Image (cartoon, rainbow, N blue to C red; front, side, top):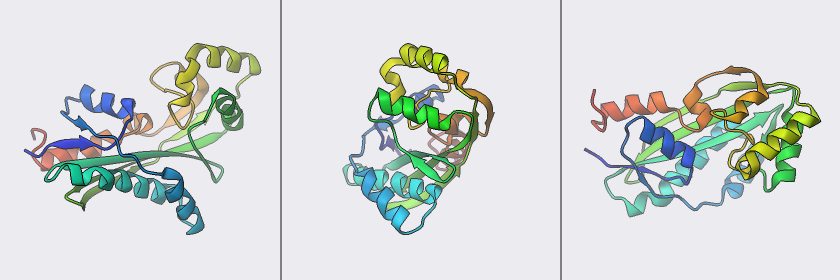
Amino acid sequence: MSRLVLASASTSRAAVLKAAGIDVTIDAAGIDENIIKTESQTAGRDAAACALLLAEAKGRAVTPRHPGALILGADQMLECAGVWFDKPIDRAAARAQLITLSGKQHELISTAVILRDGKVLWRAVERPRLTMRSLSPEFLDDYMNAVGDRVLRSVGCYELESLGAQLFDRVEGDYFSILGLPLLPLMAFLRGEGVLSA
């Protein structure tokens, strides 16, 4: 059976894989995401194409350290009204981002790529849509105080599996993809590779 290596520092992705019973080695990729995002925007790529490039770049970065292993690269991008959002750099930026998303629908594009020895074997893209309710200043104060610096961990400034659920009126799409990984298609691929029992 091939080993599975997650080329990501995301604690959420690691937790999703572990909870699903998937044994994985963590080897975070150190890539400059801004270069790929800038090049993608210059080339006119959409957010999904950019997220796939980011996932693949992460996988390629760690591939030389794990010959013969299955390398899982993953990325997630948030797009609202044509604007791409990044993880906030501080709490003030997180608050400003939540104000921008308040009362609007956004896509949380989740991608995954599997490579072995530099060859791409599998790709997946999921595009959940989330509609954020209109957030009052009082609610934002309470939310920011409750979540603290955890608000900086995700591109959307929320963890849907906890207090972030209070931000939304409607969620459409795969739950695991919202957490950062298209898990069900990934498990189908891993079963085909003999990593998981069929």
